[in-house]
Image 1 (cartoon, rainbow, N blue to C red):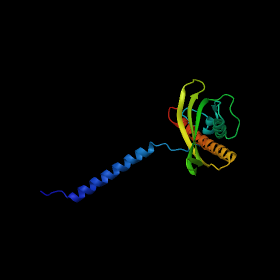
Image 2 (cartoon, rainbow, N blue to C red):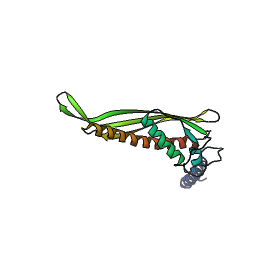
Image 3 (spheres, one colour):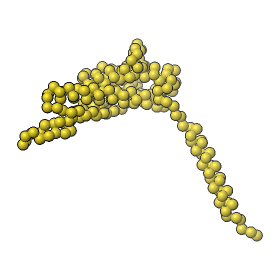
Image 4 (cartoon, helix red, strand yellow):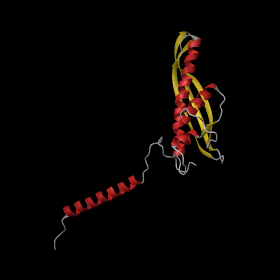
Length: 191
């Protein structure tokens, strides 16, 4: 009676393990669904319209402040691509935009007095997307962005720099919201 050759059985076992791992990997990868977010395919399951049309069917509710209006205008432009808004939107979006302005750098101009030389605008938008037909909440979330600016010694120049920083933050925040809404609609069971 002879003993089995351990090198052959170990090699055979390694081949079987590698084959099993390869088959398991192929099964896992075949279950993945990768597609471009802004393709012509519908975002949500059961939808018959393209991603662009579905995003354009979001009506953004009015807001109350200047910087929130900037976010709203930029978001509407991003959603519709500059085109006409639909007369019967499928979704309604409520925005709550807040802003805080902080001084980030200062110089000492007198013994007890500091003068700010730089500032940061932090803009945050909380949103709720609802189905226009049912009134059911489809998605909600919050996005935030910051934008820095210089504060020169002249008051008007400092004010204008802050307004420019607000406008920059509003554009970038609208882009973040556009992406977030597309991702929310693409999630399974979004509608």
